[in-house]
Image 1 (cartoon, rainbow, N blue to C red):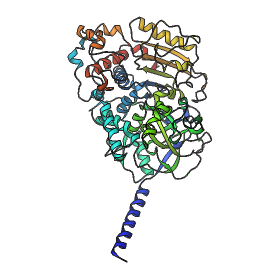
Image 2: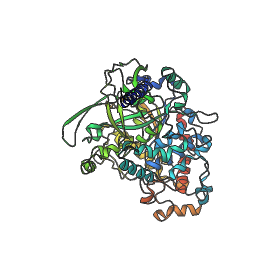
Image 3: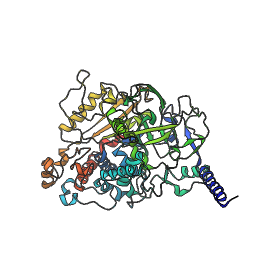
Image 4: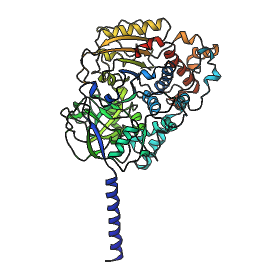
Length: 577
């Protein structure tokens, strides 16, 4: 045997050993749950959570900004111990992911959530100061700069140095989550609920280590964390895009304990290119977060056994699924448009190999069918939860939560002189467009979201309008009953109390501000606070600033959002009852 042949055989042997080692190292045992028939069958039922929840809506940096203030307000009001769930979308998920999992960047919750002041003390100088560790500081950073750099890196390297479907996720991580220890490409970490769930994972998977995981923030003296649900939308299999009907989106949950979508759905759609009929499964059960994106090694049925999980063997993906993946996917707002637009597909016809679909977050996914069988594994695309329902309310109703605060952190001013009815339905320029589909007034993609009776909408609208006319915090509390929604698995007759809190001008607070701050607000586009508090989703400070806000803008909205909670503690007392 020649020396060349020996070297060739040795090289083949070495490569084989590496492949075998890598293959073995990536095998894992994960827990999988069938869909829950009722609230007692969800995987977190054993935690015995209070039947209360808070929804932090989507809305980019504005929503993140409001959520930080609202979190602080809940802390001042001493309400966190009474809250079982937090459900969030998009910018709300940026805030809740940091709040739930941070382990650096702030010494404690006092630093993370900042300091509140009476409105009289909010001078322009004070508003221009960011304290150490304050979560709101990251809102002043320019996400767009990072995204353009990553897109260029992808194009130059043909996806070698930056994958297209990670561009948005990596940008969110670098801009917002990195400071708080939730984004490090060199040292990616899985996430799980607590030390006990991590211990159980390690007992099943001896090659994984404690250092491979982060858990929910738990520190003496800090807030007890509710159970987090970050919401995105499942679009469909990558190979079928673009599709005709974005209303077929399925709500998708990311929690510290599991990932998935409870309601098993059989979706029928049409291809925009060929008009062929497309059928695919979506939703139906959950899996442990560290196993999301994995390849099944033993296809089988996991027929329902209450909320008891079943253990299955998988091969873990090369890229670990992290908190940043969940938070980034929850906010990928462009996904629904790209996936259902021929115009958006045009660049892929001009530039072979380049498709805007590739910018939508993608993961290998295997839905669990209604009969408990694991469906075909394939690549699916996922997008912003706000493309379906921007509050995260549906996820709480699926779990039968009885008392809920919904923070509507919108940029849509509330018009108070309307008379909504079936003959004259509400429209987006009158009120936030994610509210009225919940009562059966469909709009855009939200044609399946009716969970309350049509006539109940008037009470919510009038309550919000009356509060605005009084110059007070725009909020109203309603006692509602659900109507049956088979698409989302929500039964009829489910009683729920909801406090709706709407981001709007509050003269009762603004009139207490120092004269120079009020003057800047009144200057509108010529002042420091052009659209306060209804900051635009894009370009509040011009095209070059993207979705970033200034220190003054962040602090002023933070202070108002906190005040709207702690100055109205009686309205939130129902969470304790």
